[in-house]
Length: 151
Figure (cartoon, rainbow, N blue to C red):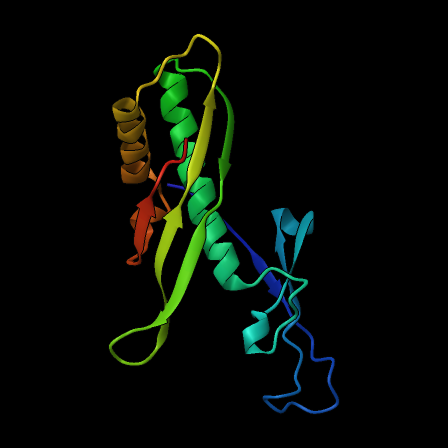
């Protein structure tokens, strides 16, 4: 149906290529290089804390997809949204084989509707449920993804 591309660029900066010393910093390029995201492994894995790590990008992709799906649903229902914030958190854990994986992502969206747009808690929960059930990214992962809307 559609393809989505990202280019990864890494060049060794260290004199050697030992696990403790090679650089993790790299770039992720989108839109034929027009958008470049500085990336690295997480600081816990000898990366650069000033750059985005894959785990953060994973959490951000889930959060962004949920928000975009939520906004589309609201727009189709003529429910005017003025603002949307999310403080999403992903948890990296060891699985039954002692391998690290992103076991859970919790989305904590806070939605601000336009004046005159009355939404009760049950309707808001239903909108988030529908957004989660239709989010392309959430449908593509096996991690537990929960949505906990905030007031």
